[in-house]
Image (tube, rainbow, N blue to C red; front, side):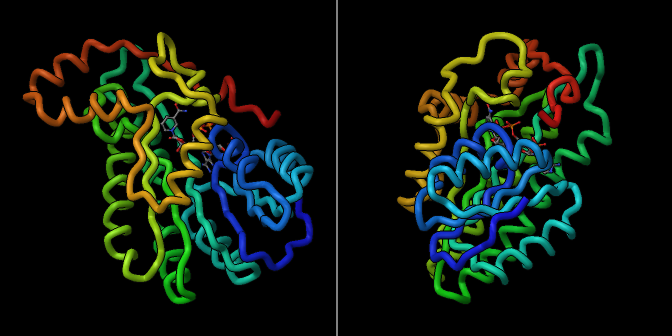
Length: 270
Ligand SMILES: NC(=O)c1ccc[n+]([C@@H]2O[C@H](COP(=O)([O-])OP(=O)(O)OC[C@H]3O[C@@H](n4cnc5c(N)ncnc54)[C@H](OP(=O)(O)O)[C@@H]3O)[C@@H](O)[C@H]2O)c1
């Protein structure tokens, strides 16, 4: 699905634009004069997001691709940026998963997939983009991390581990790129009401709507913040965990009994 790209000095590429936070961000950046390059997997949902963005006056392009294929994604990014220089890259796509009830660990294949989607591919894409943006004098890059990065989650080792890697990568890239006028912003949300969190069982404290999350994220990117963590109680939890003895923290975390419905039961192409 493609609407003729036009040159725009306000070009935003969003990964994970077919759902949740990425979709809400696409709606927020959609305005006359803006050009949106929307990536996701589901072509049907991407087309719907593009249609809604076009109604708000933006021009759009959609690309259905799987971020487990890092090199394909990198080639696509180079192609997009050569056609229409990207002024803002928002790496929102992500996968969450929890160890199955009764299992000792997460499945190795799942750990591999999560690391590719949550860390390897976004870090690769951001590196290419940072170099290109720096050479033309500036730009904005944002990563969707998670507060899970700051906790040793025994039931989600791949999720908390991949997001922790992403968090360090983001702040390190910020340190490298600040002198070149490329801002790099790490976003660490708590629970946001999207298909990802709707698969979790139990109470989700301080749940935020995708629209509210998108507004906070857009503001943080515009202000070139290094790190936004929201809602604020999660910043307190992260501080506490980093100051308590680890064996005590681990004992408490092991008590958590969060479950998640399998991805396939909700990830339809609807
Ligand atoms: N929701 C929360 O509570 C929460 C909290 C903290 C952090 N986050 C982070 O926020 C980001 C957005 O999550 P969300 O809540 O908006 O989740 P979501 O509604 O499930 O959306 C996830 C997006 O990532 C895309 N995606 C997943 N795997 C992909 C793959 N292999 N290749 C390409 N695209 C892929 C999905 O594409 P398709 O749907 O087209 O497959 C979808 O657009 C994620 O990085 C997540 O870790 C979310």
